[in-house]
Image 1 (cartoon, rainbow, N blue to C red):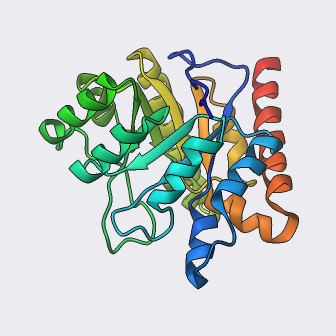
Image 2: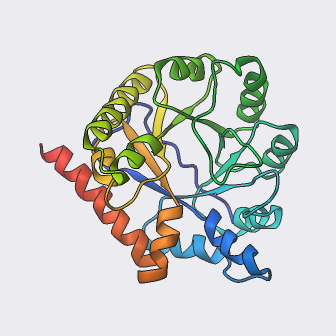
Length: 264
């Protein structure tokens, strides 16, 4: 099935905010017992029906959740754009060039981590990352870099010709969970300033990592943001209300925050 091109204005808009649903942890549950259930591809179809604008899947070196076969089936069966999260390695580059998803998001990856910890050091890894970005873009794949909301990293992303930056929202979300309102305000301000800075550089701006029903609205209201990528929370919430309803609830909160921004 041909995938749609999920492009958008570089400078963002106060209108529709895209929701990318990460289906990694549907595969985590499947892999805990083996077999084929629950099927992340079925989850992707449900996400599309529930209002998702794209699907995100992280193919890790150790294949702890998403598998190579999952990527093949997602490319064959879903019509939403696929955002393939991957480390900047030759193995992952070959897979990306074989499948040619709508976008690839380069992320830092350590075998021992439970989840992605912090953003990619684009400034420090400039020489390593540049050829990966170039080869992906030459294949018609949009390139995103998962980075902390830091001007040095955003300038570096622009310098190696990335199309998109996805801002790491984890520090803001953790501060909210900890009940540290002062730290949360500081981290939210960092996200706001980084979003404006990145948009001014001509980068498309996304955000993700750790967003929940309780934390999403202030982030969704940031006008330069074009897309939020959310996964673990939605899959966890699906235990209580089902995946489709979990996604619809998140979609409603995002739309409400963006509408209030427009009306302000």
